[in-house]
Length: 574
Image (tube, rainbow, N blue to C red; front, side, top):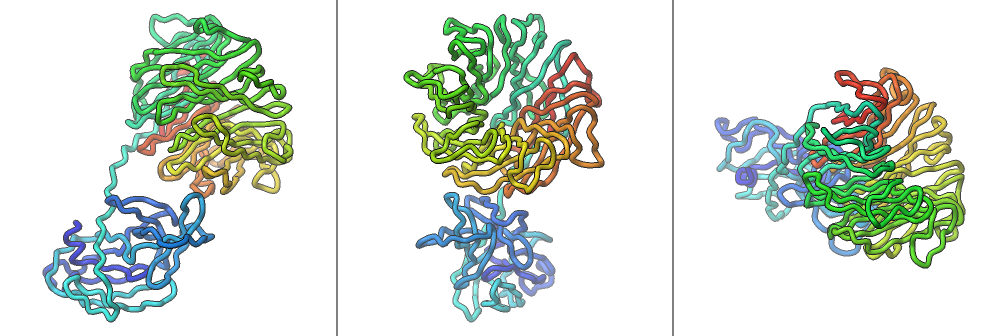
């Protein structure tokens, strides 16, 4: 394709888009009336992608949103305000994009990416003398002639610009929507979901029965881990526990297929000991679900794990809250503190950190960025940030540490009521997204109902981009957030209300899946439920863009069978 595009292309000389239909050459037998667009269309201004290794940016023009090739601007960066805005200066297109968390003008190539959008173009040996109308931002250029590459007769001397081949798109494997409901005759549910690079789905949940054939339940409640392919076909399921009760709260898979699960136990996994009423556990399983090791952390009171993450060196981070003094030399600050523990690949505990205010503090979620920095989101009833008072009953905090456990920054924010962050995720450019629920008004003058959904976006430097709030006149609880490669954000949880009149609440609490775009604008909210209580507890998006939601169902979904008191449910592209 690159060969004939270099011979015959209609292109914009500045910003704007070619508004011409004509032949490529004047020979009526060779490609007459073929249409060559001077830039493929795109959906979101400011969106960045790559085509044949060349970065392109989506820009808004008079004729719509078009992909443009970008170049690194020389000299000092100049700030801009409107993401995706385009301007023409010195016959160069400039697009407002984000670099290092700041909006700056980015110079682009003088020609957009060229693609064929109609019948094939036959390579021409004749000069193209057809008029091309260009609509630039400031009308600096008008009606230039852009002949064939062999002889350029425009009054403006222009270096030939090589045409760029269209983006090579790897076909996305789109999976049909589906529901997998399973369980025992007792209580079961999924508490965590993740996917690997191949699109396999891993879930961690609890069971009070026996999910594995010929294996009895270990105690009051066990952990199960299951692997599914991208279409929801079960590959294996494993169950483990103590003579006490266990509940998982996080699962992550590393690049080698190793699986790490964390949660809470009231029993004794190994001689490291049960320190108190509730302890933290961390287990490593291989790609086939075989348990490699399991470790337990705790003291004489309560210790809880809420989330787990793994870095590029295969170190594992677990966060939660403690009612003890777990870090040597550190005294419990209040009722409970944030606890932050690092393990190596073999399960050796490298260090443990503890921090908090004079009241109650807890960590809810942990993520690791592309440079192995670690971020924790949580809830505080006190003042964690320097020179800051608590805004309400509880506030949200986000803090960043390096891989050695040294804090880089901490942010605290909230309304006048209770704000509870529950989940955090990170995108490919290290932006952070936190979701939770609030009893007050964070992004609106008044709240929608008794408890609303909130979501907020920060960059890796702790700069806040936006906060959004949504809900029904009733009650919503947020349990998990995920972000796809396209920038769409998915928030899941439970609602007692109705988001869409055409899909009223089915009974009790329903599962909701709210979709926001990268700017935090609400795109779609789906609601799914049975006549009983249902909740989503976890969500993840695969590399192919397929969505997986895990949770607990109290009734029975169409085409499924209720196994017991409550069942596990895995929703595929709901």
